[in-house]
Length: 377
Ligand SMILES: Nc1ncnc2c1ncn2[C@@H]1O[C@H](COP(=O)(O)OP(=O)(O)O)[C@@H](O)[C@H]1O
Ligand SMILES: [Mg+2]
Image (cartoon, rainbow, N blue to C red; front, side, top):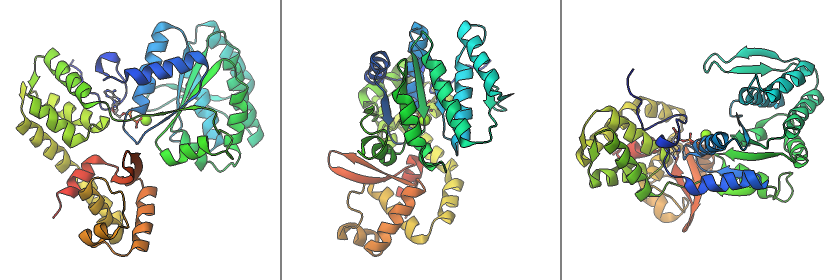
């Protein structure tokens, strides 16, 4: 069998392939011990899910908690949510152990249909009830079941902002009121939409107000990331120049997924001694491979949106998109159109809005697209 590429670009394969996040792992672990729920936020592909898996891997090894990971990205309503939660519990509890048997007993009363996910092969279940109320009660009995176990339970609900798209209106309040009463179950709410999650958890009128601790995931510190990359390469009998490492950090802006993707390619090339020149070639190659997709994006956007996107890419970070300097430099039209263009690009997740020490700024979401746009004439 071919050896696994140590620079993973999806999933989690253990601590050897996982860079840093020591402080964040400690925070999540401490929260799971001390009964504090956490809201984990960052832009996409920064490593939230990875961090959750890493933390759960450690807690599972220690045997201190039952860990349940529930990704609700693909859910559209309360029914989907109930199915995902039930399936996540099913997958986490060992069938043969007493707790797994107890769970099967609970399920008998709820009569779900069992099946296997076509892609992952994981067991899953699906409930069929006539009323919303029955789904609400089932979610409650799932939580209550977990709460009744001796071992503390850590549940991560990944892509949590998704619940704001459900057609049922009271889901936030429902979940809050159920979760509030749990004594043995701790939660991580994780998501990419900074705006939505801050609104949900820090607006005094919303059910989840002030109920959790916020954890913002930033880029991994560059020196730590460079050491990680170099030591992996060395352990596989390869090496890399210092300026090549610097170029990887520069090009990927230390955004985890992009850094990993570049390193994955460099490793796959089989090259023993990696120079800056080689890194540059691989980065260009990666971008060229995505070009077809980028042209498709262009077809999906209006000319105003596309020009705005290109201008944001060329600037890297745009703090004042309606300022005269920016508008004149890129000839992108009047402020009202720009405002509308920004909203639309935000909704399409072509750009994101974040804060740094200089204030709020806009950037292009997909870094490879951004690098490609930068080079357009
Ligand atoms: N600390 C890390 N070290 C190495 N690779 C990581 C790390 N965190 C995440 N990754 C990888 O980076 C990619 C993006 O991370 P992911 O956790 O999916 O981001 P998010 O959930 O924030 O969108 C994944 O392919 C993951 O395997
Ligand atoms: Mg994720």
